[in-house]
Image: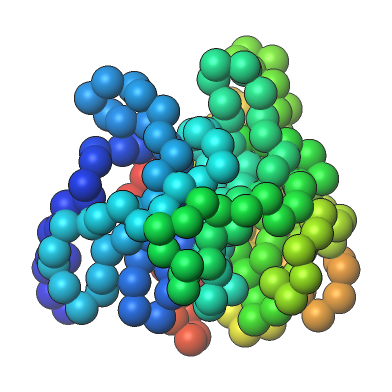
Length: 232
């Protein structure tokens, strides 16, 4: 056990997406916390260093409340909310790590545009789960599990449904399954851990509970366990 080492991004930002390679982490989209300015740049920081992040590319649009995943060679940003037009974009942005200095490409669309969704991935596919449509107080809690192939660009297809729709949870994965954990479903914070198989299109099952309901949290995984931390 130890203490986390701090580092700095080039810009303070919130409600952004993130993805990673073996050696580096990336963040994109979101908005500046000091001014509310919407962002579409991609920042990279190196795991082996505590140096500040640097801009390495551009996404095709500005959006906040988005999510991301990785194929190993490319990062994907999806979901979110575009406040100037009051829209939930369906577009999936793909950024190839070996092509720094370029603009991401449009690689397909979600089945339903939504914000506060959470992405995870298997070795061959990306998945987008949960989220919300509408605006407060008329919010719809989404229960879709969407899937797309890393091998070929294209639209997401329906993989199954969650036991319960929610937004602002978190998703992690084992080699064979995806998991969505916690989140918010009006009027309560959720504790459910929902599990779905990668091998075939199927609905999620409820396999347990977090120690407490939480939303806006982060998570990660080892080869044997999933971990949730932070939130409210």
